[in-house]
Length: 252
Length: 252
Image: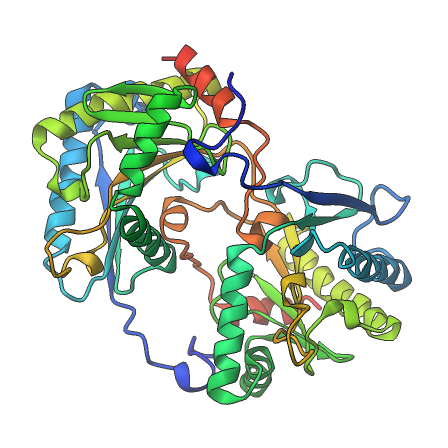
C-alpha cells in the first residue's frame, strides 16, 4: 500500500490540522437527554460553549462542528451519553453556501433569513412543535428526513458561543422536551443532534456582526439515504412536516 | 394537518413536475449483478440509455438520476433486482457545483478534470482496482466511504446516453467484475450504484459539446453517516483508498 498522497500537484497542499474532543455527559451509562435532569443537560451545553470559545483562539482552525450521535443508525460507536467537538482548518462548503445564502437574503431584504423563517412558522403554526423560553422548535418546510426538527432562538442570536448561562438552561429544558417527544412518538429512535453556529471564518467581519442565526438540528435516523440522495443531494421524504409536528406536539 | 405550502411568498412557485420509473432487471428474484450473465446486465444498461434519451425529449425536465439500491442499509425497500430512474424539473445543486468545477478546470488547464484524474490514477496505480475494455475502476483519493469505487470510461466520454451497445457490453463485464470483488471482500454488502452523467440542463450548450465525463459510483454502505457529516458535508473515512483498492484487487 502506498502513502495516501494526492495524485499530481495537489500533494502536500493541505496541513490536515484539526482537533477532536469527546464530551462525556454524565457518569450514568443508561440515561438520555430526555431522562437526565435539566441541570445535567445544561452542563453539557455550557461545555459546548466554553470549548467553542477556547477553540476559536486557535487561528489555524476555520470551523468547529459540535454534534451528538445517538444509536447505531446515527453512526454512534459507543452507547455512553457523549457528544463530540470536531474542529477543522477549512470552511466546509456546506457552511460557506449557507453563509452566502444568509448574506444574500440580508442584502435583498435587510432581514435575517432565520428570523423571518421563525416568524412565518409561528404565524402558520402547523409545523411548530413548541415555542417556549426564547426558543422555537419546528419541523422545517423542506424537511430532509421524517421528523427532522430545528430548535432555534426565537429572537436574533448569531452565535451559540454568545449564549448566557440562563439562555442555555432554557435551551436544556426545551431540548429535553423535544427529544422526549421524539422518544415517545418514535420509541427511542437513533438520531443526530447537530449544532449550526457562526463559523470562525466569519469572526473577522468588518462591522463585527456575523450574519448568522444559530440552530440545533435534530435528525431522527429512521431510514437510509439511497442512490437518489447520493447522486443529487436532494432528499425524498414521505412524511409531510405538518404531520410530523402534529405527532410531536401530541408526544410532548 | 394543514396543506404543505411554503411559508410566505414561496408558495406555489414550484411545479413539482417529474417522473419515476422502476427497471425490473430480471425475472429471477435471488440474483445479483455479480451472478447474472453479462448479457443480462447489458440489457439493463441499455434500458438506462434508452430511457435517458427518451426522457430528454421532455423539456420540462432538467435532470435524470439513475441509481440502484441494493440491501436495506442502502435504502432498498424491495429485494428483487431493480434500478430506478428519477427525473426532476430542477438542476440539483450538487450537479450544478460539479458542472462549475469541470468548466473551471477546463478554463484553467484546457483539460477534462476526469480525464486527468484517470490518467494520474493509472500512473500512480495503487488506487486502481482494474482497467479493462475502455473502463477504469478505482477508489477515489478523497473517498467518502470505505471501499467507494468509481467506474469511469478511460477515454473522454461526456454522456452515458452516447454509449454504443458494444461499449455498454464492456461496461456490463467491468461492472460485474467490480461488484463481484466487493461481494467477495465485504460479503455481499448493501450498496448504492449511482450514475453521474451530463445533465439535461447542459444539453443546449453553444458549441454542442457538454463539459462532463460520465461515471458510475459504487457506494458500499458499511456504516452510517453521523453528525459531523450532516453538519459539514465532509466525510470521515477510516480506510485509505489505497488499502481498499488492494483488497478489491485481491478479490477480483
